Image 1 (tube, helix red, strand yellow):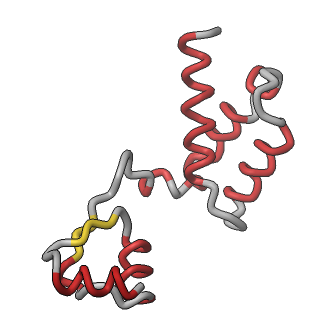
Image 2: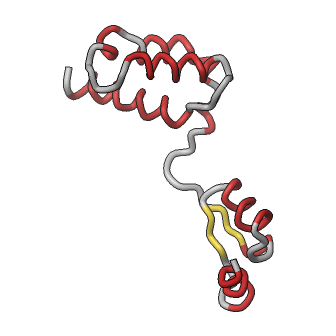
Length: 113
């Protein structure tokens, strides 16, 4: 981390990170740069609004656990069921995985079926 710390103090006035977690790891955990140097620029789609699956459980189950989706053979049905169950009960956060599976299934429904 010597090089990173040196470059942050001598060679740059901005450090770009893509999440608050990355900022915490680089700045707080490893001591690189000072807080005012960091710009947090999130990538892609903000999935935070979709993290509350409790209000969307019926849609999630309807789409991802449908017989048609499960019979496609692309992803093991038990893995999808496990993601949905673990996420909707709050045991694990599978927001990214469920969002990806949901978008894939909706794409199949629109363009393949």
